[in-house]
Image (cartoon, rainbow, N blue to C red; front, side, top):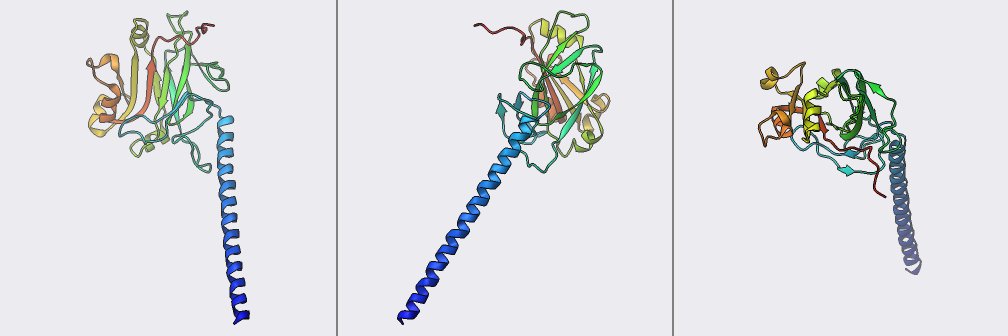
Length: 248
């Protein structure tokens, strides 16, 4: 009996030791895996080529819910803010079509410096989805001394817009009326959307555009575009001058 008890006791101790060892190995694997994900995500942020000013989804049925991130040092990401490493980042191609000869810049390395290569409209550029980008508009026709700093919010692909975005670009146009409204102190919100079949007759070139300054007072172009179809992008333009030096 004594020998049997010692054998049972030894087996018990061995089982406990094996369980503790298994738990320790599992914990190490979890920590290593977490560090790998965080490190890889940090690298993706560090070496991104387009720098959004925010990561957030548009509110409405057109856009997936995700994580909102404001400010900070971002790289090229998609929504949600931390994406699986193995999945290719989704992008939308923007086609800047007007006005011709206008110069466009955006941030690449240092936030607020608009240090990208200057692009002259018309041109095309791919932007990761689920983020807001600040661009600089200069050499504006008939306004040579004016500089504008709109933001462009790129919506994430949804089931209704997937086929369209896989084959088409999103047209981005700044009009004389847009600049006149801003110079008069108004804030312009322009929504580009893919209309549902019942609203196709209101669209030009396959997409529709709603501008707050052209709607009834109090109407929200984002809500209305979301009702009519799938939001592709939102352009917001005001008179804030980001080239003004800060007070010291």
